[in-house]
Image 1 (cartoon, protein in one colour):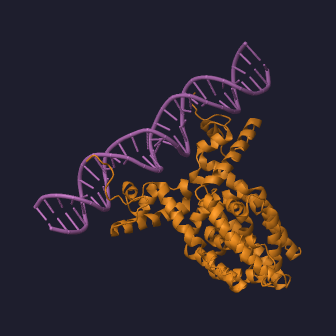
Image 2 (cartoon, helix red, strand yellow):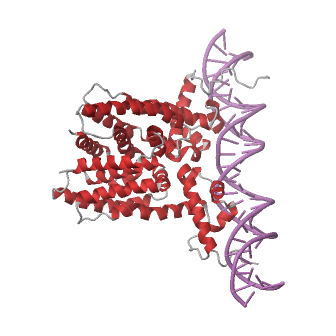
Image 3 (cartoon, chains in turn brown, green, cyan, orange):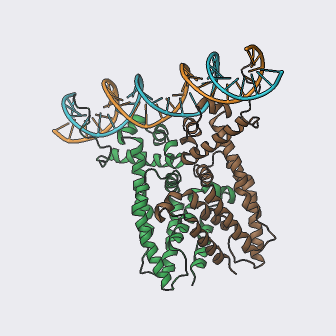
Length: 212
Length: 212
DNA sequence: ATGGTATTTGACCAATCGGTCAAAAGAAGG
DNA sequence: CCTTCTTTTGACCGATTGGTCAAATACCAT
């Protein structure tokens, strides 16, 4: 009994091997998403996450080596899907359709995954201490590329003149607002679901902004 | 020495009476704004704030009774000034000018007081646990009133048809984005100041959206 | 200088933080 | 049934948390 590391340790970067592991890791990530998105990284506690997941704290740490590891895995898994809609924009498509489709997809993400959006918002608002390098490389390149396509569309006279990068910022700001500031939107509008009216509003907005 | 409360205790709701108190309370609030806006309420610690303010923790607690009290005073002082630009909108003015002026003022606030914006963003993203009642009453009324004015402008055919409340949301989202997501904007754009181009972009956007 | 007030601090506290560990309890195959 | 591996847990650790308190110090009018 000299070795202290379990032979079949699956925590950390390893992939789950049993059904129990898969189930519990998912429960933990779901609980962690809830807690991290509501309190930010430093404001969240392992006890909260464990409690939300219905596990004991040591048991939670049996599946993940640390608080940072959970947060990191959550953020990592988020980033890919979060920017997919932007990558999905087709430079050879009809400009207005492509942009409106992107807006729609982004608003759907805000509606269907508000906690993911708030997790990301927390990270950014607090200075992006964990994903700044990603922002300065991958994200920056992706935005530069997309801005290039938009600039070409403008040069070809297919949409109105507009700063391409700020256009992208505007799409992010307008769509994520409904997830990140949900309580404010709800407090002002009442408990009704704001997403239908928001979708109409945003389509109108971008149609007018981009009409030639 | 029976009484434990100092006769001249000025902490809590009392107003500062000496120059030292005024100075130190201001230093504390400035430090607290920095820390709270970066880490959120739960993620911020009194030691951090005290350190940032150049005071010892007990000394900090000589001027404010608790962590909550500091955060509360900060938020309270913020709310008034934060919505002033909206209150300053003149229902009898020229619609487009009024709205564009509001956008400009709001963007200036984001540029000049980004930490205040992020303090507010943190509070809202995390569910507004401390100011939800305010949102549901004062803010809601204010938005309802302003939406009424905008609706009238639309009825009079002075600006294009648009959902007034979502128009207000759009202004908030677009302007605050540059403060709340500053690191992302900077990471994508480079270190250059984005506010000049943002101002132009937003003016163009709202002109097109509201043109009759 | 002196006395009273305002301010500052070191030492301390209970509670909670992230994390560890050895042992107990399940699960599975033979 | 027994063995082996996986999963769970209670007890515990040092560090940090928000906050207290009595004593020390700075300030100021007389």
